[in-house]
Image 1 (tube, rainbow, N blue to C red):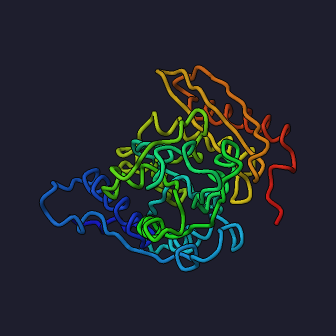
Image 2 (cartoon, one colour; image 1 turned 60 degrees about the horizontal axis):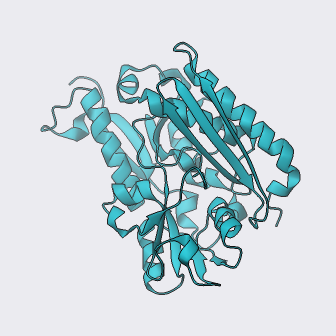
Length: 318
């Protein structure tokens, strides 16, 4: 092979490396890898430690938001040290740095939130005043909307760290993305799931995304790993995220379902304490030519309606 291998940047966490390893194989096969020879000749993984990984004792909103999981990786992409980056789409800010694009999204994993506990089967069954561990404002608000008596404790860290904290009794239950558990071979730990219609997950949850420089978006190997159904669903969800100026200071959930060309989207935003919830649902029949733009337009429309109704109350101010 005469050309250089694709250099893939990713966070160095156990989950990120597991997810990036899956994508490394997909990319390598798209480039002609036979599954036997040295995969590094086609695609190389380059772990990059981000600020979000280094700082584990505070909520993201206190130290700069979701961008702290992508900043160093995107800098490497912009200055040419890597050719693409693999991210969990739910961790991506609504806006990207100039010159970068979300170029390809493969098939989505389970988008639901998983409930893990040693004292209850479901969130609704937790004892009064039980401690729920999460660092997600959305999960906090959705849980408090159903169970305002719960004591939400800040729980950051990778999946193993959060599970260890649960085992040590620092929380009575935790909420994690089922997709991450599945990719780590830990899906059996889930006791139940939050209903994605009643409590929509983070926009893009369960999906991985390949970020590239804008000039590379039409490369053949990127086209080979794209999943059209996932692309359309997450376009709608991220449209809502953009309209709501989604960040670590807003509790935003969105869940899109595709049936043929019929796309249905639920969008919600809650006040941080979960007391107020604002929801919209809509659908559109997509055309084949402008389907992604139409999906995004639906998200923008529903997100704007939720934002107009909820107003400043949706933003955490302290």
